[in-house]
Length: 260
Length: 263
Image (tube, rainbow over all chains, first blue to last red; front, side):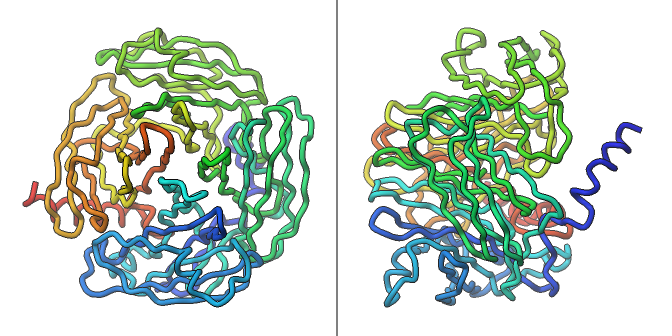
């Protein structure tokens, strides 16, 4: 009975509101929308694995990489020959530096593997690039890695992120400290504009910072948090089902990156 | 339902932050003070004790030094936040009556702190089945001057014993065995990857046929001046929708059979 009531109570939050939509075509490839950052303080790298090769399929495989600016507008696309089962580190900053003019100093990119393994089709699944990105901050001798966490887009550039009927809170379970600065990056992986409220609150619920923005589909926003007077936490309110951010924690010449 | 370990790694001490608030506003959770427990195994039994209470809406940071005197050296400290009190001694890992959410999961901050900096990820640890295996492709090695690279294998099982298992590390392309190590169940095993002879373009493949674990990749420069920490995805995460665990089984069967003759 208790279980039944729990399900009824939860139903307005789950019925007709999938976390990740299915692509229409069974042979589609899926990708995260990864955040690139490139300026004098930031360089971005990506570990490109031959996913089709990992499934035991022989031959030369390819992937397409598509870049978007911070407003979600596509500005560059490139096909890449994969190195089979060898490691292949894409220097995203170098790739972008070869363009005549960059539209912004951060944005997103996605990677679609072009050959779909037969075994993946057999399992009625979709191959998904949700791999490993690394950032170099202020020419540090070590890059910081974070994995993809969003099955955001398919190879027809249809966004797959679900939308909620009601506003949801994403309460980041992370302690924001006064002696650090933070940059919280959030992407709208849904197909409609979303109003987002960022709230930084102290543990006695005092507000420190509040910002309201509207994110267009594929748009990424970097929300800065600095000069906190007390330990705090972040609440992201929106109609996105999973408003999971990537958090950059900055202190002097050091940087740590993680996802929510 | 999850435990939250305190990690360890070279040049660093572990630090875990517990939160008694839900990661969302729509999955039903208990909104009251919860008990903070510390659990560990001595290799025969699970031992648990109460460290304190955490009010709803609050957080607490635990450093390894805070629990060091309470557990045997080299055992994995496991924190939990529960509505029930755990048995002081048990043969099986205590069941937790605690808040559980799915979108996203209830997490803590699992950090490593050196004298210079901190790195962390948002994580939790649930017991793995006894009969399980590990397959992870790990493109995280960094090759600059004074960089050291490690894989930290984090395992938890219901049984209290401490099994020693073989970990094989291959080059994915040539399928040659680069090195063999051992790992312990119910522990975090630190394995150096620098003595395996990997070059910049090699893709390391770490397997364990007898146990699974969360594979955390940890790199540092100058004995902790700079740190990086991240885990790889399980093989099921290479696909979305459909029979994802069928795809994972396919990948494991394929790679374990490919690597059998070289082991």
